[in-house]
Amino acid sequence: MMLAVASRSRDKSATTILSLAMPFLLTTTTTASFATATATTTTTNPRPLLPSPSPRCQNPIPHLRLSPPARRLPCFLAAAPGARFLPFPPTRGMASLAATAAAAAAAEVTHLTQRDAAEIDEQLMGPLGFSVDQLMELAGLSVATAVAEVYKLSEHTRVVIICGPGNNGGDGLVAARHLYHFGYRTSVCYPKRTPKPLYSGLVTQLESLSIPFIPAEDLPDDLSREFDIVVDAMFGFSFHGTPRPPFDELIQRLISLSAIESSDKRPAIVSVDIPSGWHVEEGDVDGGGIKPDMLVSLTAPKLCAKKFTGPHHFLGGRFVPPPILNKYGLQLPPYPGTSMCVRIGKAPSVDISSLRENYISPELLESQVMPDPFDQFVKWFDEAVTAGLREPNAMALTTANKEGKPSSRMVLLKGVDKQGFVWYTNYGSQKARDLSENPNAALLFYWNEMNRQVRVEGSVEKVPEEESEKYFHSRPRGSQLGAIVSKQSTVIAGREVLQQAYKELEQKYSDGNLIPKPEYWGGYRLTPTLFEFWQGQQSRLHDRLQYSQRQVDGSTAWHIERLSP
Image 1: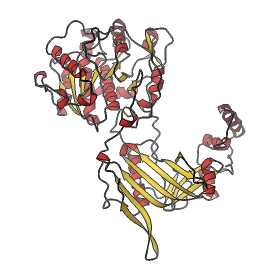
Image 2: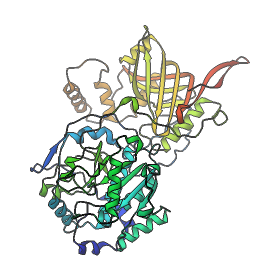
Image 3: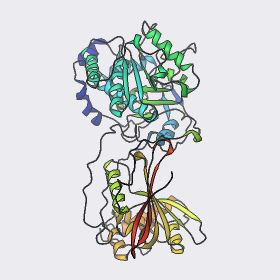
Image 4: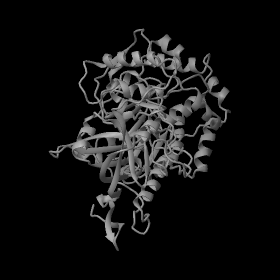
């Protein structure tokens, strides 16, 4: 439990309307600077992870979407007349939790004693001005985003949250609301309701969403039949003594679930801050307690978290101000982007062969697509932009030299019209050398969050010099200088060589005069001869629609065929 303070502190803020805390979420999060003072710490081993795609904890407000882009008729800055502008969303800077796990794991993370944890809560809700409902909102959102990061909707839809009578239970009620809005089918077991306005308000909010409340005695004997995730929000770090009915029996049921070795045959158990029944400092003393699959520590991990052996340990509660960090010598990992949680500890080992997604998408039918593949591409591209995907114009470019040896890299699409797809690069690069020997290439756009990809094949030629010139001078001055400094794909002695050359050029053009485009830099245009639009579907029965060119009555026309997945 994150919030352990005297009853008078809770009563004082209990009448605060919970929904008013939401603007606070956007304005009071603080990036914690690491304190150098010594504290009780544990060191974890760094392990880099592949980026997660889900941006689900990478995006704590998943329903927020950019306005649909306008259909623009003017030409792209560097495209031929008649080309179409590509609308781009603002850069999000949102790193996935998985991508930042290595950095988090490498840091020495402070583990709090019970006394320090209680004192920190008193400080937060005393001189530092936080209210119970604000901290509870942040805690519940942290729990929900951590759950969504690991347990994807495609495989873990049904969630039951077991809430205790105190603040830990309140965290669970808030998490239930957020998980509902994330798309999960959420139920709540709240046996001992707290008759204070803050808690009754949370219950009212859940009832307005038609989230069912299940009495403890009505929970199914076998929780695995009806639930994919069980959230343990019964007791936190301030709990003392022996759990009383019905919580003693509920804890025993979670212990029984923990005893099932195969995770495929039981729901995942997620504990909020402290696994219920554990000692806050000594952990699972007799070894017979709950064995959660995920622990979401709040504010900072408690000492008992050192005994946690499950695969997923997250830290939530992105609100700790510098006075607390400095006073208690807290060392906490940095939170990625705008996320409310961050993975800590050693990342779980992964069986690569078991990684898979069961895609759920609308069918892609021949009767639904545009007859012209350029129009179909623009439609899908606009939808990717509207969905707020990061760099939807990123594409894999594959080239091959005269011996047929292929090479691939990611580049950015900078223009598209009926003549083709445009990108810019150094004419001395590997890709440029390949294209000079073999002017055929393939592009691949992959929009993971939408279960879509587009393949494009065709021939490549340089764009006119005036087109490259116009685009070059539309770029930020820093990018123009970088294009001059980098002799792409050549070997250099070190990064300092680039930095020194850049600094010299920056000084040379500090007067703001026009920076000349280097002769070795410019654009290419791929003229397509084939498109394939791919939509992921369940059981690997994906939709694949291919557009290829055919001669019809002496003219070239696009022909649509369905390919086997």
